[in-house]
Image (cartoon, rainbow over the protein chains, first blue to last red):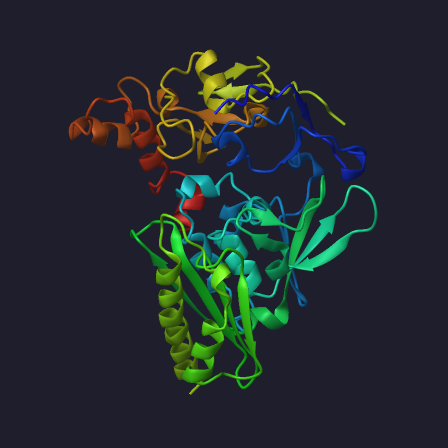
Length: 274
Length: 127
């Protein structure tokens, strides 16, 4: 929609050109949320596309995703190294969006993470793959925050005023892990009531990342594949206030379905390991 | 820093247009102001797809795209998809099947469906 409160669009070619930050400023990446509802408190858009960040950089150390990388680029990402077993997660998480494939052509990975909704599938993806966000404050040194700590609640995150999410780094060690994903929705292509990803390094660490069912990502880490009882107990230990209640499911329903899906994930990864 | 809009013209259905959009204006509104009235205002929030156009060959919901991003790009609306007597195959199929109800959304449906055909977007062929 038209955002009639906007009076100025700034298109910097370097982040340093934005040397001040004032109320009313907003970073613009894909724009798919900003342009989807009125923005009465915003009068200036600062367009990030002019910064020219490379969308995806692949190296032996892992994958670095620029905040401005479009979803469509993640959906079609192919990496020739077959030892990176978790690569199919990229497409699976894109398919978990409550959005048309046309939205993939505009929406960005950074936008989805910064929106910080419980059911943001790019949060699920990058948290499960042990991603680390690089943040650019308006003043001071850049800082790094794990994705799982970046989102602090429904529509809430650690970004300070004017601070910019620059990129997300996914380490190769996480990309090599086996994975299992489960999504629960009230409708076939609906918003996730639970989006849960397990990753497992054969003979090593097991990581369960719970999103959508909780107000922020919850990660359960085990030094090895836990038995069913231990996993169930860990899910039970998640505080009541973390379970996120909305029109897509009550908190008790989301807790119940998480127990169920976590058990399925554990069993799938156990059978894959034998 | 470029604090305004690029002056690179945009090509709408083969027609060069250099009218500068207003700040905060979405692509749909700007296209309609340039005479592309087949681009419909539906939900105005990116949900329905009635405003679908192709931006450099990729289908987008134009109500969500900042108009200034069209600078220097090619936009295809249903008006430029085919020509009288030489309709795009998807337009022809909609016509043959009378695939319309009130017709308001048909332009967006055709632009979406056509983007999925073999002869169109390379990104769709990859799926």
